[in-house]
Image (cartoon, rainbow, N blue to C red; front, side, top):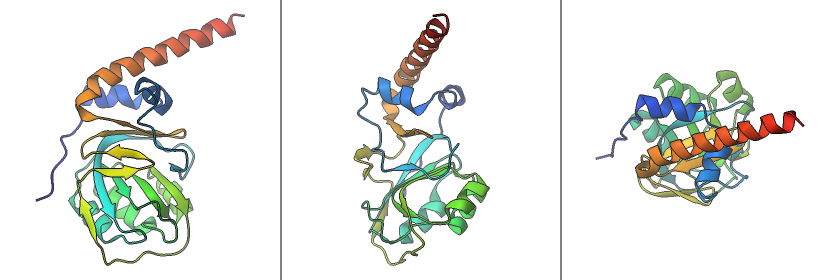
Length: 199
């Protein structure tokens, strides 16, 4: 039986949605930030939501299809594709299905395709590469297990914060603490900008 994620409390979701990923990463001691190779597929993408994790063989998307059908609205599919970039794990049609089911976005340690279509859909997506080469659909794979994405361990239900600068991962039990600290970091930077502007 697949583990279901607990939705984010509305207040914490709203507050996180106002925070840049760099501020979140800073208060995570800069340790839970995906490496730069996993980057936004289109400019302006932003996501906040609990991680629904997928481990799959490189270049194979059988379990990603299952995840789209299993995850709950608001979940972010976080896909450990073994950092393989020779075949795209997903594209336009899978994004349309995910969007129709209310999923919040994709974070893929692997390749995707149909980048322009994903931008037109405004479906938030981060990936290691873009390639036209399609995937296999044989497996193996697992859902809702700890995965390694962009050199960061992500557990089911961890909170994903992504924007143009990249993706930060908040361990669920630290959520309130990290949101409060990131808000203070953002406020401190706003004060610094005001001081610089007054010079």
